[in-house]
Image (tube, rainbow, N blue to C red; front, side):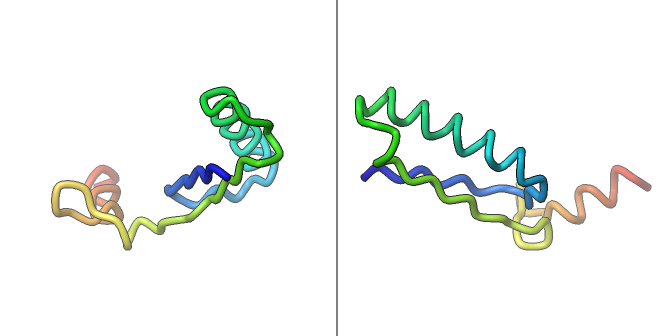
Length: 67
């Protein structure tokens, strides 16, 4: 079973999660030429204080923009 893992900021709207997982499932099923019911999609949330870009925490990058 192919597994698609999506990591990113929290996505709180359940309808957006439904759309995201549906579209990811359809794309993976097409690419692997498998039925959709064998595709697994996992959403992992990463808070901005736990991720850095270019050595700087994302939370700090956002604070600089608002200053």
